Image (tube, rainbow, N blue to C red; front, side, top):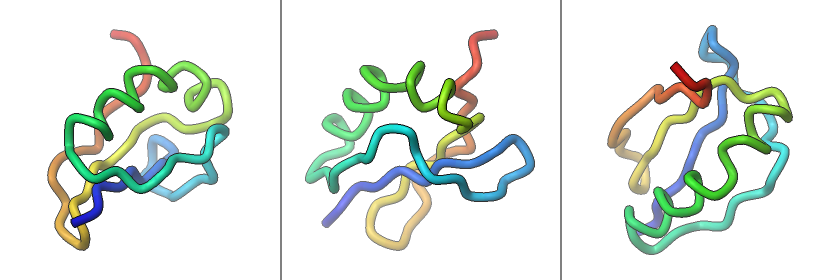
Length: 67
């Protein structure tokens, strides 16, 4: 199983992340990584992210902007 992030603009179009993620073996590792890098990703042009396990969407889109 691999956990991956998709990086998107607010309209759902995919963008290249400012920080290249790895493939994560657990959901917790993926969420910890996004917690450490969300600001850099946002500054690099991503507005939201979607978390998937293999080909299954787990949740998202989740905004990278502070509310």
